[in-house]
Image (cartoon, rainbow, N blue to C red; front, side, top):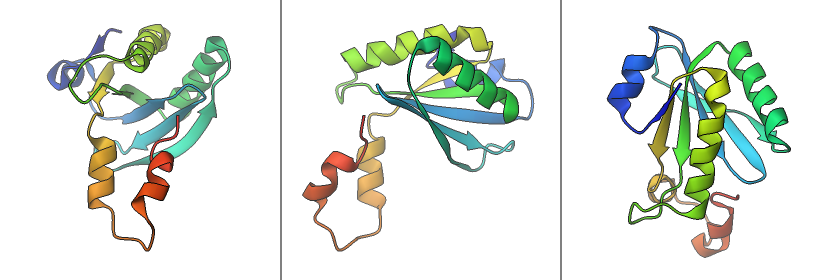
Length: 138
């Protein structure tokens, strides 16, 4: 199955009903999230420690089978100006290698997710600059 950045193409490739899985691909871990079959709510499920790609693929295959996943949404860490970075290229390559799962895949632009999360979070009695390095460890 091909990767796409088009939500319309992704939606057209999905069978009716079923769960979507979100992947946050880092250098050391892969964060996995699931949404319900109505695509209304999503939440974190587990984190897979990365080793060799064959082991990563086996873990993802088991996860998608166990949870009856019909499509993958892979976070794409673009630079703020929209250009690719070495990390972006790595995530694209990882996504291409997931073709073995035979699932529709959407590359989701996550440029502003960290900023959005920080700006909409309830205020805490913490200094934001002390937590900045923990916002999205990779």
